[in-house]
Length: 199
Image (tube, rainbow, N blue to C red; front, top):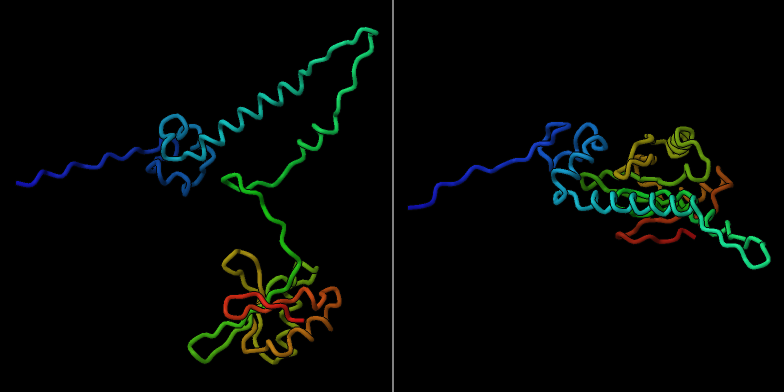
């Protein structure tokens, strides 16, 4: 005879009342973190590392603020190097998990996407990095190529311009003439999943 299945025990968060493994998707994960560290440290090991890292930073800041000075035999106080501490205190943008945020490369990427086997959309990304207003750029592209053009959010939550039709043949020349700040060396095409320079 088969064993009777046992019910699954679920740990619910004391702050947001979601199951503990879903707290990160809840309304306010920051408020749940202390409760999770205390009651479910094995579910979020990154939180434990983050908390230990913050405590180590606090200790090092306290040690730096206290400072240890020793006087030499002639009574002069030795000089301390403040340059080393000032460079280490510079704020660096960090993403969750301790990853460093990369600065966006100044480049324009043009990609042609085929839909429904016939219809084609040309996607232009990165014009905003050169100070080009995307709404104005989409109007100019739509007027020049006599097609629909709109500013949309891409899969990476960055805005891009979608132009209906295959305009990849003339777009490089149009971009460099219309916006002289965009050099031709900074324009790339995506062909077969590879980035290829337009120049």
